Image 1 (cartoon, rainbow, N blue to C red):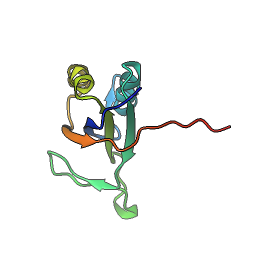
Image 2: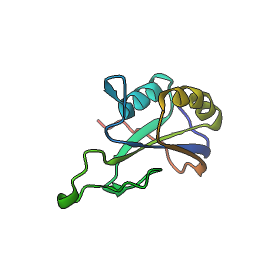
Image 3: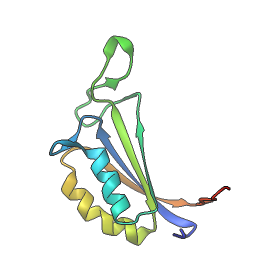
Length: 113
């Protein structure tokens, strides 16, 4: 897939323990993005954060949290991200979603022998 230099970055901020049914929500989001052929998705675990309820979630040993913050990032063309948003909205009951315009510098997969 070719990506234009002008693309969008969708960020989904959720907790590590957030589930949809019995499965982690981040897995479902990434699998749905892949199923729809979006250009790429990455899940990053945060070491500290807080959300709407202002409760601190941290990986510090003395305050071990079982619900660390996660960020799911998805990059693709604006129209493909827009088509994904209604499905994402059905999945989320808490969290935050942001969208920003980005410039893609490289998007490669060189096969090496």
